[in-house]
Length: 123
Length: 123
DNA sequence: CTCATTAGATTACATGTGTAATTTAATGAA
DNA sequence: TTCATTAAATTACACATGTAATCTAATGAG
Image (cartoon, rainbow over the protein chains, first blue to last red):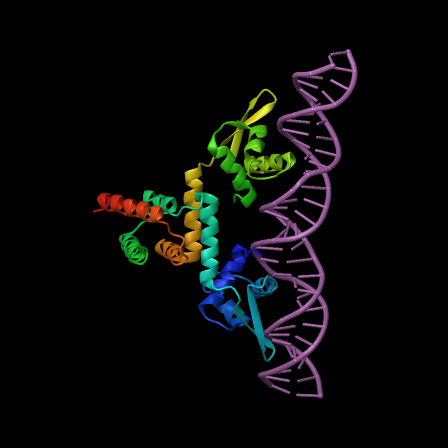
């Protein structure tokens, strides 16, 4: 099942550190966001139903933890975007960034490092 | 307004070449997809309402053309994904691809080329 | 012990999305 | 000229999503 935009924000709060109670999740979210407590609870329930989260009981609270890891989610989501938008090729995306002046020197340095590593490992 | 997943597929068909009639759009789509004609018409209507498309009349048909360019859409969508998933940095996305063995030699060559150009232009 | 508070469960409700069917108007074939 | 076909417009309808409010049960403060 798909994780929606708002659900993703909840996942991010949990990926930071878990297991974590809903009240702490609400706290973390409200540093950036202004969501009603009930709204966050609804999203938690939906994420459990979607099997993106699970929990164990601690007294009368639930402590939530992810069933989907952040890196798995990132991999799936970026793969999906790149397939839909760029026929599966990554460099057009980077090229777009370059054209929009969205590439910093740090980015370029990191990319060079990645490429160097890739070349060391492959062939 | 947001362009949905199915709407995006329609946009792609139109980006290929326009202005284009709905019947030709349906044709293009049905090479990959199996959509009912009515479904495509609905999506066209929604895209017009969202101002992603417009059209001019040709006899009793409409010839559609994009109001949102493919490259603008790509730029916006990839920026949005990278903000949501990677705090705006592009290299973690590429790193994820590398780790998943999703980087080909061609990709790497293209990235190197991009970087070379970037370095020529910046500083 | 009692009661306000709080946790989770259930229900709500408008809008968006995927997927069409129905209606209306024009048109081209016979 | 008439009628089946076809274009676009309107309507439909279930499920998803964003954003809560209400209900029910437990609990901690006094």
